[in-house]
Length: 327
Image 1: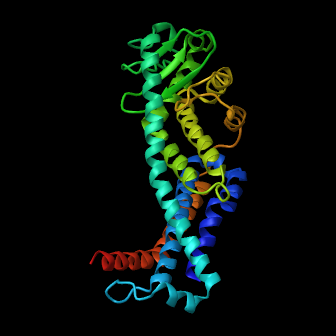
Image 2: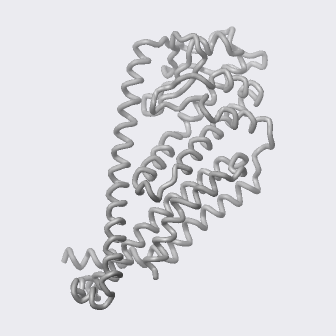
Image 3: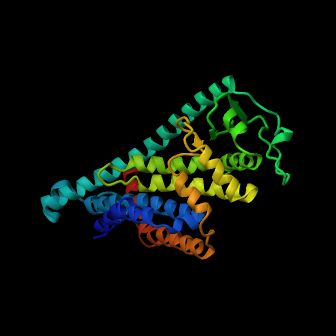
């Protein structure tokens, strides 16, 4: 029953639960708390999948007090019946497969993403222009002066307005000449602040985690809802940072201007397919503290309750099992 419960919980947390949460509208008013909730759901799904495998391993091998298996294959088939034994073996194999896929996906996503960013960073360093600071004519009447460089700004000779950032140790904020000539001073301040918020908070690492978890689970059970929702939420966090600097109206205009700009894979762009949702949000209700508190409490419940009540005992059982084998 424990193995079945863990399996059902894992399937729910990678399928129906993300689908329902992705359709909810409240995360738009509590983006930071919603990201924490998404992270808790993803981690709880992984823990539940591993717990199901541990429960099955304990049932199949029946470790004794010293951790060594006390059951044989023929003995377990006789005790469980062949169909149930085969079911246990299949689920246990899938659990090991997911664990291996998760480790592999983390490495693959990290390497591939950094390789693409390094290549594009080299290209913009060669083709783009840099500035030591914001020119005087780009200072807003309110006195907003966003330092475009510190060695990290590159300006491409492109007429179309675009803005994006390349996260990493040698991060870059990339804008086009069209952005600087088309947007007003406050709009430039908003768009630059938006990109710097991504770099400062390392939103790219959050996306990498969800990309790896998405790749680890089999296609027939996983959902793209979590990855798409988190992409939107981190943009909302950067939008909030820009609003605090330049206000909602300049940011909304800048987002619309840069909405159709093409950006490379691995970059984090100001525009994109979620621009309409984000612009509407800027004119809607402000962020809600009660919603954020509720989401944080839900995240704690989703993660802590299964871990403390169920996962920890099975992790102890796994330690005993492996200690017996190593002995």
